[in-house]
Length: 53
Length: 318
Image (cartoon, rainbow over all chains, first blue to last red; front, side, top):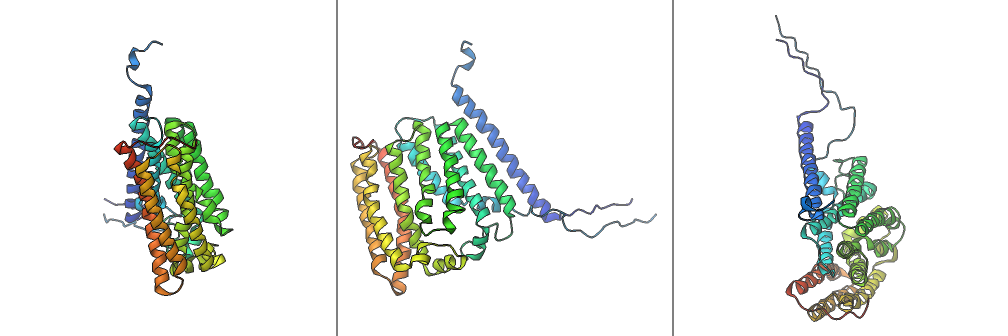
């Protein structure tokens, strides 16, 4: 059947660069999530569930 | 039925930018400067009285490192015009065209705000405020104002590089005291002879001259720069011994730091006396190289003394 190719302004090299940047950003965001999570645990200390309100 | 080929020639992107690689963005952070910042901040963290949870200490160092990187990126944004003219900096991502100035600005601002928030919220408010001030000082006071305006740019602006050990210290103690100030003063007084030794090199001097940056050798000449290098080195010697007066270090550090200080003065005297020919250039390069090593060793000595459990002197100051 017919193939329609869109007129993308981004060539293969551009897309590869963007993909790598996107992966780096995703990893950094994931690391931030872990950072905040672990720091919260450390700040709260132990036996959180057993403390009185 | 025949296939119809609707492939059109690629048109140029409507939006500029987006060309930087991950490596380019990492280069924006000035990784070599970051490594020195991390090390001095780490020493400040360890040398400070009191304790800090290892994870919180790690978070503090990470935030300080990212803050330093943010300052580097913002500096590269603002100084793109100067960097393009200087051979030493022409290959940086912005003058090389890999990253647009606006992209560097956005990247730097995001990291600056993020690092300050992380340090302030997760570690200590005072440390976060100090990091914010450090970034502001480096960009607004040094980069935007002093660097292009006065030959004393590196003397005053060098304070930005002196804050990291103080921030590491404050992350532990929550406040600035004489011990933190002593570490600050060591780097503050070290900065002028270190960078002026670099600025005396023929190629570097030519670079700054072409770019119109008023470094001391460009404005006041080589002889005056050599004189001031010697003066600052002599002033640095007693300042290096301040940690022993604030109760941070003891005999081991005092003796070793004194020995290193004598070597620093020796190199500075050679730069002062040798003013012509290859010998003069070599003396400047040796001073620059030694001063880099000196700073690392001084802070490493503080670390070693602390790790070995040597008793510090009783504080006389603070």
